[in-house]
Length: 378
Image (cartoon, rainbow, N blue to C red; front, side, top):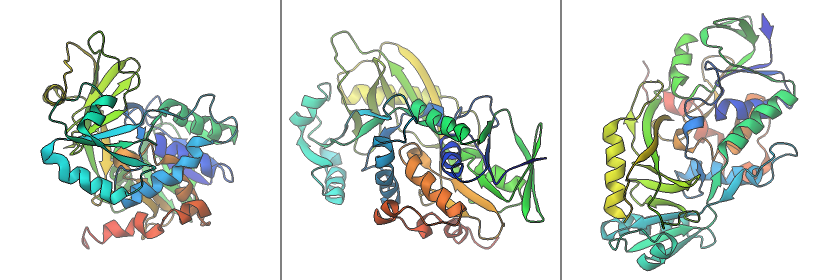
């Protein structure tokens, strides 16, 4: 029997980040079923830090994460967590209402400024003549996902926490004030289990006899290709069609493009579908002068959503000691520091850090009980 204060299920960005913050004051073990942490979603993300992405709660969590990204604790990472990028949202005539709505919603010229079509093409010259306007998010950044994830893992271990890979959870039972968690090779005991299992969140709940939240994994596809000679891409921002029909961005000398697909999927090792690859290429070539001569690499990952597209962080309203940290959707990387600090505070029954509260955080927005009420009494 291996004892700890908090047993975290899931070694992706959610599990490792909350484990990091909890381990400052408690004994923490993180379990990962794969041979390497972050294999499924974290390792396949095209994460960017953008403050205008997502709903109100997501934007608040993103802003709450900025100070950590800018000034992580000493020794957290040898490289910068954020790198210059910027974000350009572009629209043709039909997309103007959506672009106007975005600009009206943000109303902060220090974050988002309106551009003409020519201004947009000055940033990304390959955009076609049908692009009539854009919005430039100057403060958007690229995130070094590996440095962020490894920083959380390293910090967890420095604080005497553990990350156990190849540890698939096969059963959870609550008795005498603690959870007993059985894996393929060990048995653990902890008063609090944190379910940070991503697409497998409801599966873990079912093993524990806990009511699921109705999580829905969605497949997203991406590919990289080398643009034609003479196309200088190094300083391009992430470039997003305003209706999110597709987006593209520079990545290690190549261009990454995604059709921004959201195909419902069971929890699995997601693989790209040729139809989605073709759709990404078609949309890119229709809106730009780019031509995809050869696909260098293609992949797919799962982004798991709740019904209201807002993450869950909080204790289950019925199951004692069962804490949910799931449903980050496509925002898990950029919100990780803020959301993990919130989750750690809630799990320890402590106050959420004041800067996060001042940024608009409300525990009720993230509470799992809100989803139970929408699922009916069954």
